Length: 157
Image 1: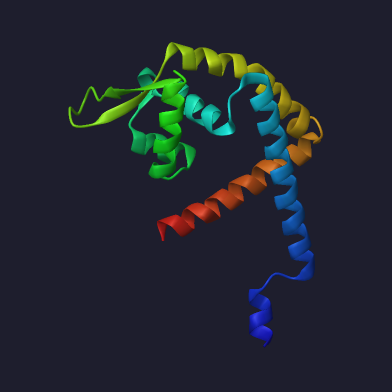
Image 2: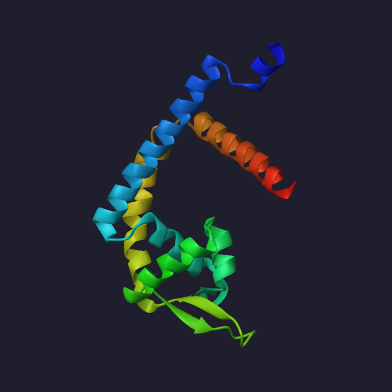
């Protein structure tokens, strides 16, 4: 019985976990709401546009794009169809592999990203950066890094 208890979180650990998750979800929800109302972009749109904007030639293979934003290929495929209909991205032949395709950022997509970025970054500052002291922000970075490293080691195992 004692060994089973050690494998489960304590009441205090569960309280901290719930507080962390609920706060993270509240932040994501508020940021998503503001992004949508200020730019008509969803967080998914913004993630795709950001990844493409940062990519060489503003284009990526769908598998690489899915990996960069942490989505399954099927989810990305459906989302890209909607973004393509809105003129934010286009599918193009791969320059290095005639059998492959790439997702390319359109001028309209680049402009939509540009218009969305300033209000979005202001909201990030207001909701996440400003409430934290410098040492709290550093602790948040350390926490995120430690959790991400743990998750990556699980994937690599």
